[in-house]
Length: 420
Image (cartoon, rainbow, N blue to C red; front, side):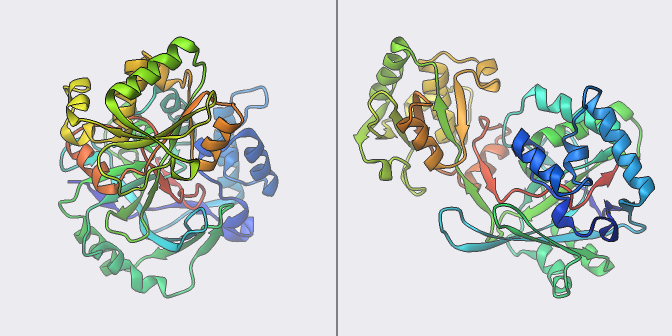
């Protein structure tokens, strides 16, 4: 089973930086050059200076190392004296004018384990490039700078119930991100509360929701250092699978470089394997509760959207004979097997490096790409249900990349986990 421990955090000293508002940032992998510049302009101590360092002609990882060390010496960041658990509340409005929800969890350290039953499971495939980047950064800073976001089974919400009384006080810090999510953070030192959290996690396995590259980097670093010590643990935010604020959105697929033979190959594959229904753009993204394997499709040549429903589950079974039934029911897996790999002949390397493939986090962006012909074709996906994520992970399998988009993101800069 997963082993959790309180966190002796390295954190920003609020008296030195003013507030976490100016120094926090989104996860590194959603920050482009313009956003990085904007974040760095907010404060010379913004976390991008160490989590997404720029070398200015030199080694960016060495720059991160010297910057963090200078911050420690200057008192910009300080290390807690006692291990604690940190409760986090994230209040957000569902994009598109939806309801207001609150997701609740807690930061702690988790012992690094190999993936497996009863311990820690991934749910998406990873790529070597980001892992190498994060490993070099970890070697330089000797810290987890951003958390892994993981889920655990807790139908009774016992973990949060142990912490909730301590969130009645004013939070240690509040950060409102650029999407309007209000993140509130509380330090929980009470030993009985920490014991209650540990009891809630007894016998539970953890499912990584976001941060697969960070977790696998932590595992590589722990083996590289060897022996026992702080490096055998990784910073995590843990959220119950039953938390009412847990939300997953889809990530849509966009294709480019489709010459006439490839267009024909897609058309033949869709007509052969799917029921094809002509719809308007307002119905191109299927509802979450639609039965079977369902997705939307449109291309920039005709700009006519369609609803696609897999005709026969045996088609998916034949295309993925070595996969579990849970995996074969994934919309993203069926699309990958029948269209990306099957019709277009994409390899794992093509998919990993996005050759002819890109992603859109929202339907409006994908639709605009079709209408403006910046993409040749788009597949409009449904969100993957949490239970389906759990079933695939329980089968020991990892989903295709970008099968889930957990919302909201967990900010970087709230807390760090020192590894020395």
